[in-house]
Image (cartoon, rainbow, N blue to C red; front, side, top):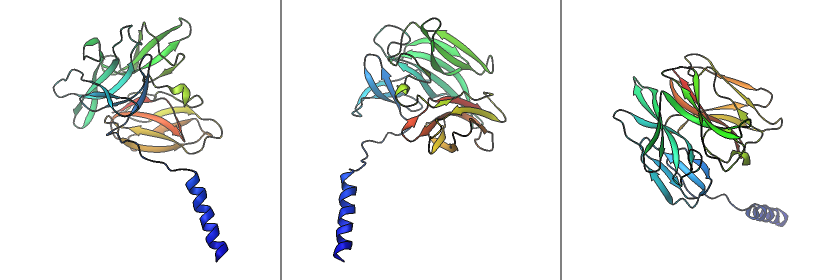
Length: 265
């Protein structure tokens, strides 16, 4: 009996030695960590009306209010940065608005705004966008998906600024070089789709427990599907996800891929 009690004591001591995982904070929706050139890392969260930027101690840094249009809501935010779209010291971002018709969210338009809500560029029929580094010109581009005027096409915008992570291409301005070097994920094809959508990806050979996670327009997790390094693609259809706008990414342990957008009609 003494040996048994002593064994329990040793086990409890070992567990205590590893420390404990503690909850620091809970956000009301999906949060992205943004790396600014001059302002460091911030948490970015948006609801259907405003965009919130929090310091790493969870205190509110800025609240940005885009223009509100009747019957439309803020669906998605991308390109959050301070010196990417221009050289002033204001925060800029791209806001996408959607409207609901018979329960199906359809893209309305995207606007490039700054932290005061001033519209710097209107991009009708565009949804979101992603930053891309052009090695040939040594400059950055901003790519948007077009849905209404030219379905299945993309627009490429030249931007005068830079990103703090340097060589990168992803949705938003996360410091992905820190966590997703060896994980890639493609845009959906076709996009938008009324049938089967194919998404390709790459994972390191020994990646354990990887999942592709789908979020709705409110940032809520709506579907989690396992992915394996032995394969390089997954197909989604309307039996898996109903019609709507989605964002998706791969998570494997502490590693997260870049995010992509998808529209199912």
